[in-house]
Amino acid sequence: MKKMMKVLALALALVMTVSLLAACGGKKDDTSKEVTIGMTLFEPMNYYDENGKLVGFETEFATAVFERLGMTPKFQEIKWDSKVMELNSQNIDCLWNGMTSTDKLKETLTLSIPYVQNYQVIVIRSENAGKYKSTADLAGAKIDAEAGSAGEKAVKDDENLSKATYTSVPMQTEALKEVKAGAADACVLDFVLANSMVGQGDYADLTVIPDLRLSVEEYAVGFRKGDELAEKVNGAIVELYKDGTLMKLAEKYGLADQLIEQK
View 1: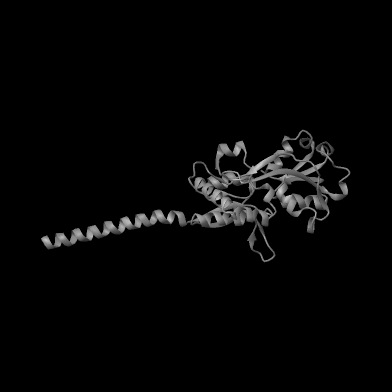
View 2: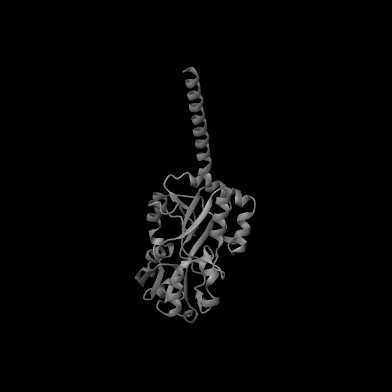
């Protein structure tokens, strides 16, 4: 009987040891999980190259951050005007796509430290460069912007643009297509996108109205309110800035002048 009790005690001790090891292992696995990133196709941030590979500043930036944290990023396209709902529904784990930091978003989400400065510009057909030189010239025009974007807010906030006939579109690139096709007279979008696409390739016949900035803003990563992952990402962003990785990525995608110093 005593021998049986000793065997049972040893067995119980073994089970407890295995359980403790499993628990420790579980904690370790928390930092090696897959992280789903909500984004839209937005050159030079996230876009597909000629080989169908997802590339871009945000793509490489996010990958570098999560690799440093021992996590694997998975990029998932979403509707940008539904971004907060997608995040809070846990369909995604963060928003990383040239997202403008606003007071409204700060009330709803936990935002990372800002890393790139941006502003909104107006794109028109080059043939109309003499016609549209200011927002006042566009008061009676047809204007497009991405739904739920900083561009849409800029249209609504501007005294002249708010009088125009406004149409929201799913993506900023759709707004460019509308202007090119003549369905819209102008569109409002991020400088970083306009800088990489307007005046070249398919959009060689489009131009940005010079010396006209509708708003100056900063990009940040969005997380669910109180998510501890935000602080870990902040730490990795600072490390990548200090070791030069972030600057190299910014230079690669033409964003060196917009990169925000991290101390």
